[in-house]
Image (tube, rainbow, N blue to C red):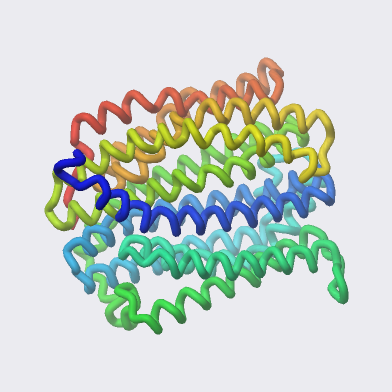
Length: 449
Protein backbone atom coordinates (compact mmCIF):
# COMPACT_ATOMS: atom_id res chain seq x y z
CA UNK A 1 0.00 0.00 0.00
CA UNK A 2 2.81 2.39 0.84
CA UNK A 3 4.37 1.85 -2.61
CA UNK A 4 1.13 2.24 -4.55
CA UNK A 5 -0.39 5.16 -2.65
CA UNK A 6 2.32 7.09 -0.98
CA UNK A 7 1.60 6.82 2.73
CA UNK A 8 2.70 10.37 3.50
CA UNK A 9 0.45 11.75 0.75
CA UNK A 10 -2.52 9.80 2.08
CA UNK A 11 -1.93 10.97 5.64
CA UNK A 12 -1.65 14.59 4.55
CA UNK A 13 -4.87 14.37 2.57
CA UNK A 14 -6.73 12.50 5.31
CA UNK A 15 -5.72 14.68 8.23
CA UNK A 16 -6.12 17.95 6.32
CA UNK A 17 -9.80 16.96 6.15
CA UNK A 18 -10.11 15.01 9.39
CA UNK A 19 -8.50 17.44 11.83
CA UNK A 20 -10.89 20.38 11.15
CA UNK A 21 -13.83 17.93 11.35
CA UNK A 22 -12.43 16.59 14.63
CA UNK A 23 -12.02 20.10 15.99
CA UNK A 24 -15.52 21.08 14.90
CA UNK A 25 -17.02 18.05 16.63
CA UNK A 26 -14.78 18.56 19.67
CA UNK A 27 -16.09 22.12 19.98
CA UNK A 28 -19.63 20.81 19.58
CA UNK A 29 -19.11 18.06 22.15
CA UNK A 30 -17.34 20.39 24.59
CA UNK A 31 -20.23 22.84 24.42
CA UNK A 32 -22.71 19.99 24.89
CA UNK A 33 -20.75 18.90 27.95
CA UNK A 34 -20.69 22.46 29.31
CA UNK A 35 -24.44 22.68 28.69
CA UNK A 36 -24.94 19.41 30.55
CA UNK A 37 -22.70 20.57 33.41
CA UNK A 38 -24.53 23.91 33.72
CA UNK A 39 -27.94 22.26 33.62
CA UNK A 40 -26.65 19.52 35.92
CA UNK A 41 -26.06 22.17 38.57
CA UNK A 42 -29.84 22.61 38.66
CA UNK A 43 -30.47 18.97 39.65
CA UNK A 44 -31.04 15.39 38.43
CA UNK A 45 -34.58 16.06 37.12
CA UNK A 46 -33.35 18.97 34.98
CA UNK A 47 -30.48 17.01 33.44
CA UNK A 48 -32.82 14.09 32.68
CA UNK A 49 -35.41 16.48 31.17
CA UNK A 50 -32.97 18.16 28.80
CA UNK A 51 -31.52 14.76 27.88
CA UNK A 52 -35.02 13.58 27.04
CA UNK A 53 -35.78 16.64 24.90
CA UNK A 54 -32.43 16.38 23.15
CA UNK A 55 -33.26 12.78 22.31
CA UNK A 56 -36.03 14.07 20.02
CA UNK A 57 -33.59 16.57 18.49
CA UNK A 58 -31.13 13.69 18.02
CA UNK A 59 -33.81 11.75 16.12
CA UNK A 60 -34.21 14.69 13.73
CA UNK A 61 -30.45 15.06 13.46
CA UNK A 62 -30.01 11.43 12.40
CA UNK A 63 -32.81 11.60 9.83
CA UNK A 64 -31.20 14.74 8.41
CA UNK A 65 -27.85 12.96 8.36
CA UNK A 66 -29.40 10.04 6.47
CA UNK A 67 -31.07 12.31 3.93
CA UNK A 68 -27.95 14.39 3.32
CA UNK A 69 -25.46 11.50 3.41
CA UNK A 70 -26.93 10.27 0.15
CA UNK A 71 -26.13 13.69 -1.25
CA UNK A 72 -22.63 13.38 0.18
CA UNK A 73 -22.02 10.24 -1.88
CA UNK A 74 -22.93 12.13 -5.08
CA UNK A 75 -21.12 15.34 -4.10
CA UNK A 76 -17.79 13.61 -3.39
CA UNK A 77 -17.88 11.75 -6.71
CA UNK A 78 -19.03 14.88 -8.60
CA UNK A 79 -16.10 16.70 -6.97
CA UNK A 80 -13.71 14.03 -8.25
CA UNK A 81 -15.08 14.65 -11.76
CA UNK A 82 -15.06 18.48 -11.26
CA UNK A 83 -18.76 18.57 -12.15
CA UNK A 84 -19.80 21.87 -10.51
CA UNK A 85 -23.31 21.84 -12.00
CA UNK A 86 -23.86 18.38 -10.51
CA UNK A 87 -22.62 19.54 -7.10
CA UNK A 88 -25.03 22.50 -7.09
CA UNK A 89 -28.19 20.68 -8.12
CA UNK A 90 -27.33 17.95 -5.59
CA UNK A 91 -26.97 20.67 -2.93
CA UNK A 92 -30.32 22.21 -3.90
CA UNK A 93 -32.14 18.88 -3.63
CA UNK A 94 -30.62 18.34 -0.17
CA UNK A 95 -31.85 21.79 0.94
CA UNK A 96 -35.43 20.94 -0.11
CA UNK A 97 -35.38 17.61 1.73
CA UNK A 98 -33.87 19.08 4.90
CA UNK A 99 -36.31 21.98 5.00
CA UNK A 100 -39.25 19.57 4.83
CA UNK A 101 -37.90 17.30 7.60
CA UNK A 102 -36.93 20.16 9.94
CA UNK A 103 -40.34 21.83 9.44
CA UNK A 104 -42.11 18.64 10.51
CA UNK A 105 -40.03 18.32 13.69
CA UNK A 106 -40.53 22.01 14.47
CA UNK A 107 -44.31 21.65 14.29
CA UNK A 108 -44.37 18.57 16.52
CA UNK A 109 -42.06 20.22 19.08
CA UNK A 110 -44.18 23.38 19.24
CA UNK A 111 -47.61 21.78 19.45
CA UNK A 112 -47.19 18.30 20.98
CA UNK A 113 -44.02 18.13 23.14
CA UNK A 114 -45.69 16.40 26.09
CA UNK A 115 -47.11 13.68 23.85
CA UNK A 116 -43.65 12.90 22.50
CA UNK A 117 -41.75 13.00 25.80
CA UNK A 118 -44.40 10.97 27.66
CA UNK A 119 -43.46 8.03 25.44
CA UNK A 120 -40.05 7.94 27.12
CA UNK A 121 -40.52 8.89 30.75
CA UNK A 122 -43.20 8.37 33.39
CA UNK A 123 -41.77 11.05 35.67
CA UNK A 124 -44.22 14.03 35.38
CA UNK A 125 -41.60 16.58 36.46
CA UNK A 126 -39.13 15.36 33.83
CA UNK A 127 -41.82 15.47 31.12
CA UNK A 128 -42.95 18.97 32.13
CA UNK A 129 -39.42 20.40 32.19
CA UNK A 130 -38.48 18.61 28.97
CA UNK A 131 -41.58 19.98 27.21
CA UNK A 132 -40.67 23.54 28.23
CA UNK A 133 -37.16 23.08 26.83
CA UNK A 134 -38.30 21.41 23.59
CA UNK A 135 -40.96 24.02 22.79
CA UNK A 136 -38.46 26.85 23.38
CA UNK A 137 -35.64 25.30 21.32
CA UNK A 138 -37.85 24.29 18.34
CA UNK A 139 -37.36 27.53 16.28
CA UNK A 140 -33.70 26.61 15.71
CA UNK A 141 -34.46 23.31 13.92
CA UNK A 142 -34.80 24.77 10.41
CA UNK A 143 -31.66 26.97 10.56
CA UNK A 144 -29.79 24.04 12.08
CA UNK A 145 -30.90 21.81 9.19
CA UNK A 146 -29.76 24.30 6.55
CA UNK A 147 -26.42 24.74 8.35
CA UNK A 148 -26.12 20.96 8.44
CA UNK A 149 -26.38 20.77 4.64
CA UNK A 150 -23.80 23.53 4.19
CA UNK A 151 -21.38 21.80 6.56
CA UNK A 152 -21.64 18.36 4.98
CA UNK A 153 -21.41 19.62 1.41
CA UNK A 154 -18.39 21.80 2.18
CA UNK A 155 -16.66 18.71 3.57
CA UNK A 156 -17.17 16.88 0.29
CA UNK A 157 -15.54 19.73 -1.68
CA UNK A 158 -12.66 19.82 0.84
CA UNK A 159 -13.61 23.20 2.38
CA UNK A 160 -13.73 22.24 6.04
CA UNK A 161 -12.27 25.26 7.86
CA UNK A 162 -15.31 27.52 7.41
CA UNK A 163 -17.72 25.15 9.16
CA UNK A 164 -15.21 24.70 11.99
CA UNK A 165 -14.94 28.49 12.41
CA UNK A 166 -18.71 28.99 12.27
CA UNK A 167 -19.23 26.26 14.86
CA UNK A 168 -16.60 27.75 17.16
CA UNK A 169 -18.14 31.23 17.03
CA UNK A 170 -21.75 30.15 17.43
CA UNK A 171 -21.15 27.62 20.18
CA UNK A 172 -18.87 29.99 22.10
CA UNK A 173 -21.78 32.42 21.99
CA UNK A 174 -24.02 29.60 23.20
CA UNK A 175 -21.83 28.99 26.26
CA UNK A 176 -21.77 32.68 27.19
CA UNK A 177 -25.53 33.05 26.79
CA UNK A 178 -26.07 29.84 28.78
CA UNK A 179 -24.20 31.26 31.74
CA UNK A 180 -26.16 34.52 31.56
CA UNK A 181 -29.63 33.07 31.01
CA UNK A 182 -29.56 29.83 33.04
CA UNK A 183 -28.26 31.46 36.22
CA UNK A 184 -29.38 35.07 35.67
CA UNK A 185 -25.98 36.74 35.83
CA UNK A 186 -25.85 40.53 35.86
CA UNK A 187 -28.98 42.18 34.42
CA UNK A 188 -30.22 38.96 32.79
CA UNK A 189 -33.19 37.02 34.24
CA UNK A 190 -32.67 33.56 35.77
CA UNK A 191 -34.50 31.29 33.28
CA UNK A 192 -33.08 27.83 34.08
CA UNK A 193 -33.47 25.28 31.29
CA UNK A 194 -35.56 27.74 29.24
CA UNK A 195 -32.53 30.04 29.19
CA UNK A 196 -30.39 27.18 27.81
CA UNK A 197 -32.90 26.69 24.99
CA UNK A 198 -32.97 30.41 24.10
CA UNK A 199 -29.17 30.46 23.97
CA UNK A 200 -29.19 27.50 21.56
CA UNK A 201 -31.68 29.20 19.22
CA UNK A 202 -29.61 32.40 19.00
CA UNK A 203 -26.38 30.44 18.41
CA UNK A 204 -27.88 28.36 15.57
CA UNK A 205 -29.10 31.47 13.71
CA UNK A 206 -25.64 33.04 14.03
CA UNK A 207 -24.01 29.85 12.68
CA UNK A 208 -26.27 29.83 9.61
CA UNK A 209 -25.57 33.51 8.89
CA UNK A 210 -21.80 32.94 8.97
CA UNK A 211 -21.96 29.88 6.69
CA UNK A 212 -24.21 31.39 4.02
CA UNK A 213 -22.54 34.80 3.77
CA UNK A 214 -18.99 33.41 3.71
CA UNK A 215 -19.68 30.57 1.26
CA UNK A 216 -21.17 33.02 -1.26
CA UNK A 217 -18.58 35.73 -0.64
CA UNK A 218 -15.77 33.23 -1.39
CA UNK A 219 -17.68 31.68 -4.33
CA UNK A 220 -17.39 28.08 -3.16
CA UNK A 221 -18.53 25.34 -5.55
CA UNK A 222 -21.84 24.92 -3.68
CA UNK A 223 -22.68 28.65 -3.91
CA UNK A 224 -24.97 28.54 -6.93
CA UNK A 225 -27.78 30.79 -8.10
CA UNK A 226 -31.40 29.86 -7.44
CA UNK A 227 -31.69 28.40 -10.95
CA UNK A 228 -28.47 26.35 -10.57
CA UNK A 229 -29.47 24.96 -7.18
CA UNK A 230 -32.98 23.95 -8.15
CA UNK A 231 -32.47 22.83 -11.77
CA UNK A 232 -33.49 19.35 -10.65
CA UNK A 233 -34.90 16.85 -13.15
CA UNK A 234 -36.85 13.68 -12.42
CA UNK A 235 -34.00 11.45 -13.60
CA UNK A 236 -31.57 12.93 -11.08
CA UNK A 237 -34.12 12.73 -8.26
CA UNK A 238 -34.66 9.05 -9.11
CA UNK A 239 -30.91 8.34 -9.06
CA UNK A 240 -30.51 10.30 -5.84
CA UNK A 241 -33.16 8.40 -3.93
CA UNK A 242 -31.94 5.04 -5.23
CA UNK A 243 -28.77 5.76 -3.24
CA UNK A 244 -30.15 8.02 -0.50
CA UNK A 245 -33.34 6.16 0.43
CA UNK A 246 -31.51 3.20 2.06
CA UNK A 247 -29.39 5.71 4.00
CA UNK A 248 -32.50 7.61 5.16
CA UNK A 249 -34.11 4.33 6.27
CA UNK A 250 -30.82 3.34 7.91
CA UNK A 251 -30.52 6.56 9.92
CA UNK A 252 -34.22 6.64 10.77
CA UNK A 253 -34.23 3.11 12.18
CA UNK A 254 -30.81 3.57 13.80
CA UNK A 255 -31.92 6.80 15.51
CA UNK A 256 -35.13 5.08 16.59
CA UNK A 257 -32.92 2.37 18.04
CA UNK A 258 -30.95 4.98 19.98
CA UNK A 259 -34.28 6.46 21.10
CA UNK A 260 -35.22 2.99 22.32
CA UNK A 261 -31.98 2.90 24.31
CA UNK A 262 -33.02 6.19 25.92
CA UNK A 263 -36.50 4.81 26.57
CA UNK A 264 -35.05 1.70 28.25
CA UNK A 265 -32.89 3.78 30.58
CA UNK A 266 -35.63 6.36 31.20
CA UNK A 267 -38.02 3.56 32.19
CA UNK A 268 -35.28 1.94 34.30
CA UNK A 269 -35.23 5.08 36.44
CA UNK A 270 -34.33 8.76 36.49
CA UNK A 271 -30.92 8.01 38.07
CA UNK A 272 -30.11 5.42 35.38
CA UNK A 273 -31.12 7.83 32.62
CA UNK A 274 -29.06 10.66 34.13
CA UNK A 275 -26.01 8.34 34.28
CA UNK A 276 -26.56 7.28 30.66
CA UNK A 277 -26.65 10.94 29.53
CA UNK A 278 -23.50 11.80 31.47
CA UNK A 279 -21.60 8.86 29.91
CA UNK A 280 -22.74 9.82 26.41
CA UNK A 281 -21.63 13.41 26.99
CA UNK A 282 -18.13 12.31 28.08
CA UNK A 283 -17.90 9.82 25.22
CA UNK A 284 -18.53 12.56 22.66
CA UNK A 285 -15.31 14.31 23.71
CA UNK A 286 -13.17 11.38 22.56
CA UNK A 287 -15.37 9.98 19.80
CA UNK A 288 -14.79 13.12 17.71
CA UNK A 289 -11.53 11.57 16.49
CA UNK A 290 -13.36 8.75 14.73
CA UNK A 291 -16.06 11.04 13.35
CA UNK A 292 -13.26 13.05 11.74
CA UNK A 293 -11.43 10.00 10.40
CA UNK A 294 -14.61 8.41 9.01
CA UNK A 295 -15.85 11.56 7.30
CA UNK A 296 -12.40 12.53 6.01
CA UNK A 297 -11.77 9.10 4.51
CA UNK A 298 -15.28 9.07 3.02
CA UNK A 299 -14.44 12.21 1.02
CA UNK A 300 -11.13 10.76 -0.19
CA UNK A 301 -12.65 7.42 -1.19
CA UNK A 302 -15.59 9.05 -2.98
CA UNK A 303 -13.24 11.43 -4.80
CA UNK A 304 -10.98 8.59 -5.95
CA UNK A 305 -13.99 6.65 -7.26
CA UNK A 306 -15.13 9.74 -9.17
CA UNK A 307 -11.61 10.05 -10.65
CA UNK A 308 -11.72 6.39 -11.74
CA UNK A 309 -8.93 5.38 -9.30
CA UNK A 310 -10.70 2.38 -7.77
CA UNK A 311 -7.51 0.62 -6.63
CA UNK A 312 -6.62 3.67 -4.54
CA UNK A 313 -10.16 3.71 -3.08
CA UNK A 314 -9.84 0.04 -2.05
CA UNK A 315 -6.43 0.66 -0.49
CA UNK A 316 -7.80 3.63 1.48
CA UNK A 317 -10.64 1.45 2.78
CA UNK A 318 -8.24 -1.23 4.06
CA UNK A 319 -6.07 1.37 5.74
CA UNK A 320 -8.79 3.27 7.58
CA UNK A 321 -10.45 0.11 8.93
CA UNK A 322 -7.11 -0.99 10.38
CA UNK A 323 -5.92 2.39 11.63
CA UNK A 324 -9.14 3.49 13.39
CA UNK A 325 -9.40 0.48 15.80
CA UNK A 326 -5.73 0.81 16.77
CA UNK A 327 -6.24 4.48 17.54
CA UNK A 328 -9.43 3.61 19.45
CA UNK A 329 -7.50 1.23 21.68
CA UNK A 330 -5.23 4.12 22.73
CA UNK A 331 -7.95 6.76 23.04
CA UNK A 332 -10.13 4.49 25.19
CA UNK A 333 -7.67 5.09 28.03
CA UNK A 334 -8.61 8.80 28.00
CA UNK A 335 -12.09 7.84 29.19
CA UNK A 336 -10.74 6.58 32.52
CA UNK A 337 -9.31 9.91 33.79
CA UNK A 338 -12.38 11.69 32.41
CA UNK A 339 -14.54 9.58 34.72
CA UNK A 340 -12.71 11.10 37.72
CA UNK A 341 -14.11 14.52 36.78
CA UNK A 342 -17.75 13.45 37.07
CA UNK A 343 -18.15 14.20 40.83
CA UNK A 344 -16.65 17.65 40.27
CA UNK A 345 -18.75 18.54 37.24
CA UNK A 346 -22.15 17.05 38.03
CA UNK A 347 -24.36 17.58 41.06
CA UNK A 348 -25.82 14.07 41.19
CA UNK A 349 -26.32 11.36 43.83
CA UNK A 350 -23.55 8.86 44.76
CA UNK A 351 -25.54 6.00 43.18
CA UNK A 352 -25.47 7.84 39.84
CA UNK A 353 -21.70 8.34 40.10
CA UNK A 354 -21.14 4.62 40.71
CA UNK A 355 -23.24 3.72 37.66
CA UNK A 356 -21.32 6.23 35.52
CA UNK A 357 -17.96 4.66 36.47
CA UNK A 358 -19.14 1.16 35.52
CA UNK A 359 -20.60 2.34 32.21
CA UNK A 360 -17.38 4.15 31.27
CA UNK A 361 -15.35 0.96 31.79
CA UNK A 362 -17.69 -0.92 29.45
CA UNK A 363 -17.57 1.91 26.92
CA UNK A 364 -13.75 1.85 26.87
CA UNK A 365 -13.75 -1.91 26.15
CA UNK A 366 -16.13 -1.45 23.21
CA UNK A 367 -14.20 1.40 21.56
CA UNK A 368 -12.01 -0.59 19.08
CA UNK A 369 -15.07 -2.47 17.81
CA UNK A 370 -17.08 0.75 17.48
CA UNK A 371 -14.23 2.43 15.58
CA UNK A 372 -14.08 -0.36 12.99
CA UNK A 373 -17.85 -0.26 12.50
CA UNK A 374 -17.87 3.54 12.19
CA UNK A 375 -15.13 3.40 9.56
CA UNK A 376 -17.00 0.78 7.56
CA UNK A 377 -20.40 2.50 7.58
CA UNK A 378 -19.35 6.14 7.09
CA UNK A 379 -15.87 5.92 5.58
CA UNK A 380 -16.24 2.94 3.25
CA UNK A 381 -19.78 1.71 2.46
CA UNK A 382 -21.47 5.08 2.00
CA UNK A 383 -18.55 6.58 0.10
CA UNK A 384 -18.73 3.57 -2.22
CA UNK A 385 -22.49 3.83 -2.70
CA UNK A 386 -23.03 0.51 -0.88
CA UNK A 387 -26.01 1.88 1.03
CA UNK A 388 -28.21 -1.23 0.96
CA UNK A 389 -25.62 -3.33 2.80
CA UNK A 390 -25.17 -0.47 5.28
CA UNK A 391 -28.81 -0.83 6.33
CA UNK A 392 -28.29 -4.48 7.26
CA UNK A 393 -24.89 -3.85 8.81
CA UNK A 394 -25.99 -0.94 10.98
CA UNK A 395 -29.39 -2.24 12.10
CA UNK A 396 -29.61 -6.03 12.24
CA UNK A 397 -27.69 -6.63 15.47
CA UNK A 398 -29.07 -3.50 17.12
CA UNK A 399 -32.72 -4.52 16.66
CA UNK A 400 -32.43 -8.32 16.92
CA UNK A 401 -29.89 -8.64 19.75
CA UNK A 402 -28.85 -5.49 21.63
CA UNK A 403 -32.22 -3.78 22.21
CA UNK A 404 -34.13 -6.99 23.16
CA UNK A 405 -31.31 -7.94 25.55
CA UNK A 406 -31.28 -4.48 27.12
CA UNK A 407 -35.07 -4.42 27.50
CA UNK A 408 -35.10 -7.90 29.06
CA UNK A 409 -32.25 -7.01 31.42
CA UNK A 410 -34.14 -3.95 32.66
CA UNK A 411 -37.83 -4.85 32.54
CA UNK A 412 -37.84 -8.65 33.02
CA UNK A 413 -34.84 -9.25 35.28
CA UNK A 414 -34.40 -5.86 36.98
CA UNK A 415 -30.62 -5.86 36.48
CA UNK A 416 -28.57 -2.80 37.43
CA UNK A 417 -28.09 -0.03 34.88
CA UNK A 418 -24.49 -1.01 34.06
CA UNK A 419 -25.64 -4.53 33.08
CA UNK A 420 -28.33 -3.04 30.83
CA UNK A 421 -25.62 -0.88 29.25
CA UNK A 422 -23.46 -3.97 28.62
CA UNK A 423 -26.33 -5.67 26.79
CA UNK A 424 -26.90 -2.65 24.56
CA UNK A 425 -23.17 -2.31 23.80
CA UNK A 426 -23.00 -5.95 22.60
CA UNK A 427 -23.94 -4.96 19.05
CA UNK A 428 -20.53 -3.36 18.50
CA UNK A 429 -18.79 -6.71 18.92
CA UNK A 430 -21.33 -8.68 16.87
CA UNK A 431 -21.14 -6.34 13.83
CA UNK A 432 -17.41 -6.67 13.20
CA UNK A 433 -17.41 -10.02 11.35
CA UNK A 434 -19.97 -9.15 8.62
CA UNK A 435 -18.24 -5.78 8.15
CA UNK A 436 -14.84 -7.40 7.72
CA UNK A 437 -16.23 -9.92 5.20
CA UNK A 438 -17.82 -7.12 3.16
CA UNK A 439 -14.56 -5.18 3.14
CA UNK A 440 -12.63 -8.21 1.91
CA UNK A 441 -15.15 -8.94 -0.84
CA UNK A 442 -14.77 -5.50 -2.46
CA UNK A 443 -18.50 -5.47 -3.29
CA UNK A 444 -18.97 -2.16 -1.49
CA UNK A 445 -17.52 -0.08 -4.36
CA UNK A 446 -19.99 1.48 -6.85
CA UNK A 447 -19.55 4.52 -9.12
CA UNK A 448 -22.91 6.29 -8.77
CA UNK A 449 -22.15 9.24 -11.08
